[in-house]
Structures are given as structure tokens and as C-alpha cells.
Length: 122
Image 1: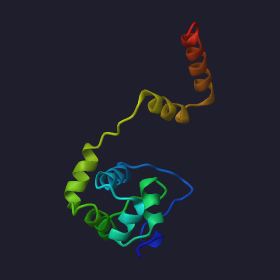
Image 2: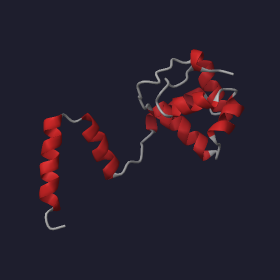
Image 3: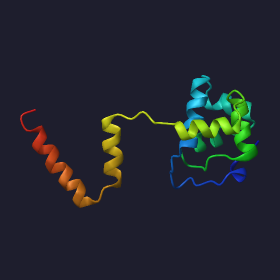
């Protein structure tokens, strides 16, 4: 089975890429569990999970081909076109949380003050 040595692992740091998001979306479109996807691709379940959750770099080359074959045989060029066109559906709440995760403490204090002012009387 293809595992962590074939792709650079980074389990301590999470970096979500559109490649990972598209791979997850493709798996879900085919109604495959992570276990089923791993079996079809000949990789470990943990590799599928780590790639999809941003704990491992997105696969390239032969590793990517394994994922794509398991998910319907899409060609690499078509996959990268889909990645370029990918738009994640986010709610305003998700967007606010993402912004707050990047904000500095003084910016967070300002957001809290503004929010409290908006919530008066609610």
C-alpha cells in the first residue's frame, strides 16, 4: 500500500488545498467511504484521511493517478482544471470563523465590541 513515504506528511500542520477539497468532493460524489476509496486506490485509509484533511500534501504523479482512477478515471489535466475552478461553499459563519482565526488580538477585541453593539436589543 502507498503510504506516508510516497507523499510528504505534515500531520502537525493543517494546510487545506483546493486539490484536497476536490479529491474529497470527488470521493463523496461517488458515495465512497474513505475505506472504500483507499481499497480502490491501493492506499491506506489514513492516507486518504490525511490528504483530505490537509495533514498531508496533495498527491502528485502516480499517487494522484491512483486517487483519480479510484474516483472514476479522470485525467490529471481535467483534475487540475476542476481544481482551478473550485469554489468552496461557505456560510457567513464559516467565513467569520476563518477571518477570526487569522486576526490579531486587538482586531478580535474590535470585532467583539462591534458585535455587542449589533446584538443590543436582539
